[in-house]
Amino acid sequence: MRVSDSDEKLVTAALQGSGRAWRRLVQRYEGRIYNLGYRLTGNGEDAMDLTQEVFLGVFRNLRRFRGDASFRTWLFRIAHNKAVDLNRRNKLQSLMGSLDEAGEFAAGELSARVEFEPDHGLAERECNRLALELLRRIPLEQRLVVELKIYQSLTFEEIARMQEISVNTAKTRFYTALKKMRLIPEEENALFEN
Image 1 (tube, rainbow, N blue to C red):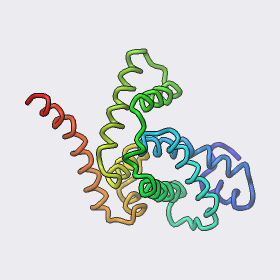
Image 2 (image 1 turned 30 degrees about the horizontal axis):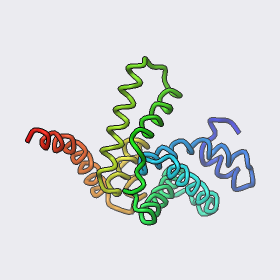
Image 3 (image 1 turned 90 degrees about the vertical axis):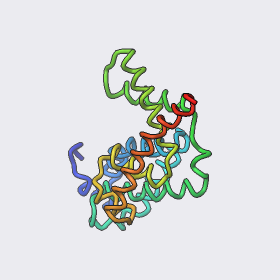
Image 4 (image 1 turned 45 degrees about the vertical axis):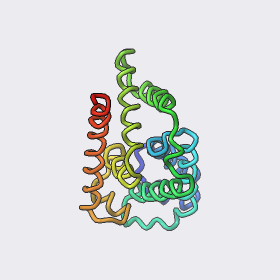
């Protein structure tokens, strides 16, 4: 299998029993799924659990993949469903990890991708810490849309199909979330000014 093999070719090969193709699919998406889980839960262990549940679900249901949507969209739909299940089981708000852990993760992620000056790394960690803090303060349905739009680069149409909502609802959730995230720091500053 070449690195550039399409998802569809890898799925076909995996369905024919190729362990190599299956591993390639997992390697291609495991980082994205883990990062999605981490941003939604704020906790590395929960993100890893979510990642494992997603790929177990994909493995069990790969034969059901019909190709109506891209494999990526189908995979993130499974991830979305598993995240919602995790929220229901564990009351996602209580699972938020410490922000210090989030900063350490973000720094490790960044250093693996880019060379940077020490001050730049500190600024990136702080930015990631603030983004995680703001994300955890908005409802899960809005958090998922922000995750899928910003971090996974899905279109509103793909998000709408994935969440079984209208495109307008996806857009409304996204822009409402952004507005809330922008207002949170302003509200906190107003408390300190009084």
